[in-house]
Length: 100
Image (cartoon, rainbow, N blue to C red; front, side, top):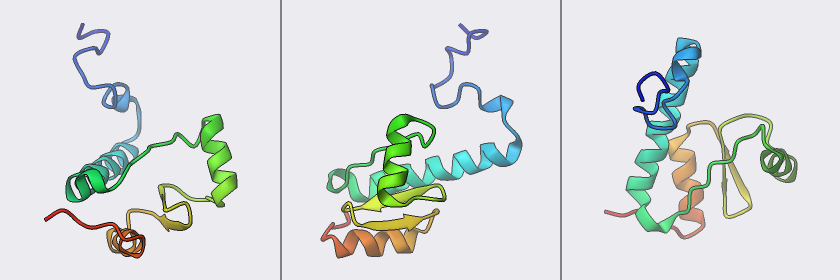
């Protein structure tokens, strides 16, 4: 199991092969999404789309996404990067309430 890396969560498998700065960026994004999920609970639906997939390409063209990560809020607003305050403003403009 250990040699097949089955002892690790799917998102942790293979991270050792990437440069340290990519692993750090992945960890920051992962932490950001987990915090967002905890903060907004059932008020938001978080979908993660791989930009290298056909669906990712379609969404990038549809929403004019040129940099990653990009959050699409309400199919209208784009928030580029790990900008927590910008994302909160976009969510509040859509009427999403933060869980207390």
